[in-house]
Length: 482
Image (cartoon, rainbow, N blue to C red; front, top):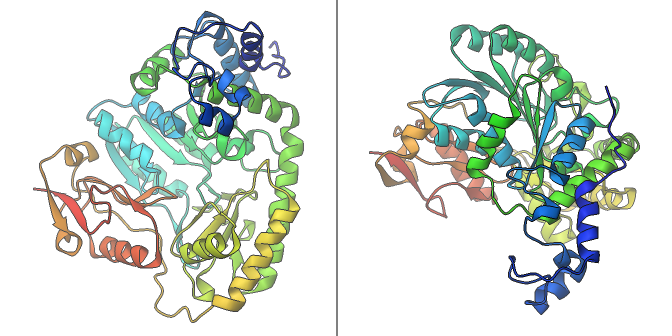
């Protein structure tokens, strides 16, 4: 097969040509290459505002690409080993929703782990599909949800032969990977599609010695956040398709909700990041692996903290591990992950990705260096010395087993009543409650409000977690079905 030239960046090149032509603009956006907002131009820079432009014939149309965007999509697919690729500017949340809505209609079943990102359940609210949840395994030492055990997936498929698809988180936020290739095999044998939320897996396509990626495993679709580990701008993403999918139909689904005013800042960042990854990805992620391994080793020397890794692989729910992830257990020093997160930010000016009730995640990617890691390591050493305490009484489990009463769509659009949190026990939740990040629901619409869920919410609030999803911004009240 003819190999495309990954040296090209068609969107970036077209924007450079557009600037050189000094086009007079009587279209949107209204700032007119920054002339209408001096403060904004000074803040972002004239080069940036010059290419914040509208769709037009020389620059193609994201909703219906026929020239440079189409070429950029072909290059993206080629770089990732996909049959087709869509450039996404509404974030990977929109990619996940497009995956679900491309294979499921109202009343149809979809098998998924309960520790999915909220975007997967949002898709069910929109399209009316019915979730069949597979409980992820839980590591008792760390208290974190893992991947799906292959035997649990087989059982779900056997009990729900009419399901249309299986969703897999791979890797999870913590770096845990599922036996993706085997899930693809058994799902395809049952005539089900496999959709992979690969938001945290851009590097799996370009690095060596890393877990298998979705396209290599034979998945039908994958949603990939290039902005997370691949270096593109925040909110830029890519949706990858395998050979089984109809790109024309998927584009129709995407266009139901994605903006018609695609940002060329985001599109060009995807274009240039793909070029960089295709040409230099192996070298980049070799460096990332070494940085993560070094940090893991040094943090574990401190004592108290546990930067976990491949030693926990059991070939079941913890089938593999993404060694670029610097996930660190904090509870043994008597601090919740969110407390360490806050101390790092407030006292040391270090911003990590997230902290939950027992762990933190420091995201290492294309832009990191050894000096910044040394600063993180030394700060953790000081935090242990200054803030550690007895861990007695700390909550030790991140995963709340759901009790499903009805579909997310039915609950979300039902008649509902705002109820004090503790009085909501035993009622059916009609909204989301989650700590963000990571954005995995504690409660989702259609689930019974259990004591475990309420206790977790109260504990997370006390520790300083950022709770989102509920209509009540303080999460003192919950909307429940009447």
